[in-house]
Image 1: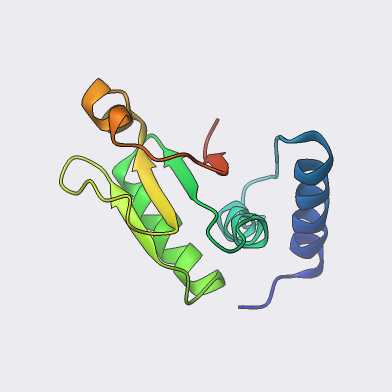
Image 2: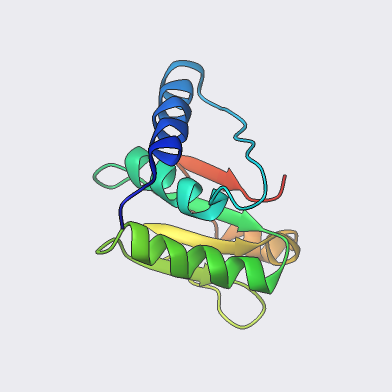
Length: 120
């Protein structure tokens, strides 16, 4: 999937901010393609063996984030941590806030190199 020029700029600036500061907040208007951009940023930030988690507060967002990520960054293994599935097997895991709020689920969480919070 090809990013639009403004999406590419957003991704480049986000990656640069993460590299220099260790964290950043990406803000974009409705219709800008935030899910596509967060997928591209995540894809850029995960290297060999790096582990990332994309955190959302609703099932619909978790499913949407995973589907878009698989289109933007094909070939990277993904998994889901929600009420019905609890797998950290993927290089990028898509998780629900309420699921991770449980101590037993947090105990299973591996070391993460990147945490992306959707709808912060």
